[in-house]
Image (tube, rainbow, N blue to C red):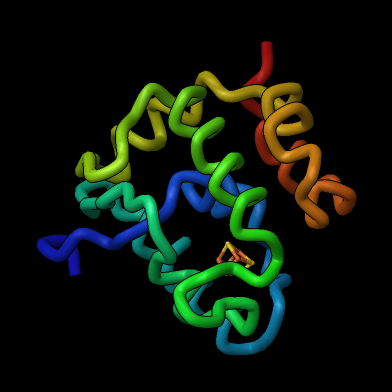
Length: 134
Ligand code: SF4
């Protein structure tokens, strides 16, 4: 699997750190668990995409290639994450490189960037990134 890049949209590069087995349905959770396992491998390649990714393809809120949770909102979120991490759509990075980029992300960044995400209220994502704060 390492030779084939996993396609991920920018905000899922953050989400995977706060994932604790919760999700929209069983298929979504299974896919996210697989993504988390893959990203544990430092050499795993990741292609940053600007479209529905491997997680979205298992999501009940994807219809006709659009996110029913709010396509514009999700696109803005992706753009904010691109700016935060200094990466580009179409870029291929390793999981080790992603880990290094995420070291610089703080819980405050998450509270700002993900303020419109319903999952933020659980506090899991902020907590996951608080560990990297000094
Ligand atoms: S809610 Fe939208 S962005 Fe999130 S996984 Fe589902 S389709 Fe993708």
